[in-house]
Image (tube, rainbow, N blue to C red):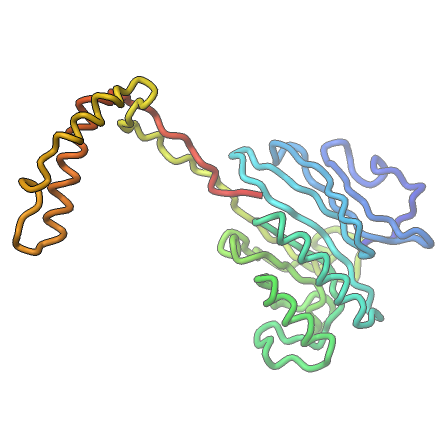
Length: 266
């Protein structure tokens, strides 16, 4: 959350080492801002969501080619139930297209006890907790961020909660920021380990002699393959062995190197 107006340029906020994505309020100062250090990631791009919410969102690609959607959000303290409907629709769109999500922001819901969310009181608060469950989101911060209230949250989906960790909660003076909220410092690890390329043998059907294969299969003596001891598994193994021997005689084989498949898909 910030108190800026559109006339303030990104270069007035942070130096050139950051990409800044803003969602300014149209009628008055304020909105949300997402600043990403350029040198920390391989690439990043802003995502336009089209929902009537104060959210800034960007997709980043790490140096190990893992993809992550990260966004900041502000919920005004006087929001009614319609905000929850909008947020629910927004999360439905996001979760249907992205598998790795980190969302942080000021949600202004002090009546939720994040140590025991099932004990939450209030209609909007209970709806919000249920909404997080519906979208398989986990809330990681349980420490107060303004007075005794936990207003600022860090949400992530079930694909990466063990990769996101709250490091510390800093008072504004220690963080050297102009705000009346404590600062949540968290980190995430998105290492993308490539699977080894395994060489394997496959049949080269383009060079196969299918006429010869058909002749060999027609000449198979099934009576000699199928026994009379009612062991269907043994009969199957005998047939499979004879079939593959015929294939090997008429279809050449080649050695190929397998592909690497991404562990993270956005």
